[in-house]
Length: 327
Image 1 (cartoon, rainbow, N blue to C red):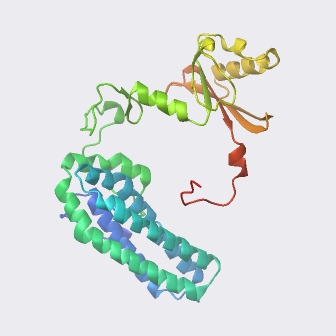
Image 2 (cartoon, rainbow, N blue to C red):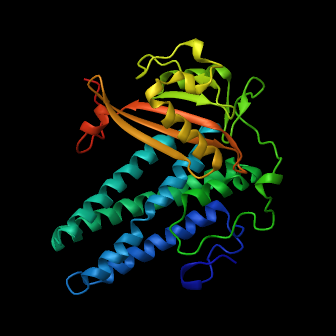
Image 3 (cartoon, helix red, strand yellow):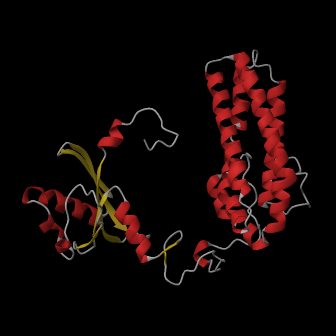
């Protein structure tokens, strides 16, 4: 049995298997309603800190929304139901903005406006809960297969839940260690021409395109100190040419900096360091340079990545920009 609110028995016991994603969503909805009721019954003038603490628990509704957006919606899109990804996600963001507004009023100890904005938040939450329970979840249950619900396990865990106790994994009795999980899941694209990475599949052309547009210079030196790769971007900080491929890295640096390069390589190979970084002013730009040790999961040294980036623009950023501005 899953841990529920203060060890209460879940009202969905028997209706949904323990740990099922929809059951967890519904249990979180009960928690949302419980927290709203607690805020309603708390005298903010007399128990301000308590009111604030309960509100912060309610603000964790963002985890509820994030799981829907990243876990549930992609499956619905696969079956052609795209409106949740559009309309409901927009409503999520509206609620997130309302949470920020209440938090701002609480920070200023503005009691009256806090209560007004909290009531508006309650209306929004009730509205979206009703849509979830009356339309979203019932229809999703009819669309997704049992195997698809089982695939939610790791993604849900990575995002997290509103519930204080972690829900029982679903299915609880079918845990397979990742190293032994050889199940091939149905993908909406072919993988014959792609390479499998830690997460996902890419063609060589896609990999090359990604490296080309990255706003950083990347050079990879293998465990034998040979340059084996660099990305050919349009705005490289430091020029490179194909002649360096296969060249020993110590010959790719000016004599005055070779000692530094050798020192970095020796420390990386010894396993005493994994990162070296520098920042310099270069031709009117502020350049951030980092060297990363590349290692196998068993910590075997496989070389070094040199990454350089012009961060002049980044250092000048202030405030926030949340809206698209292509002017």
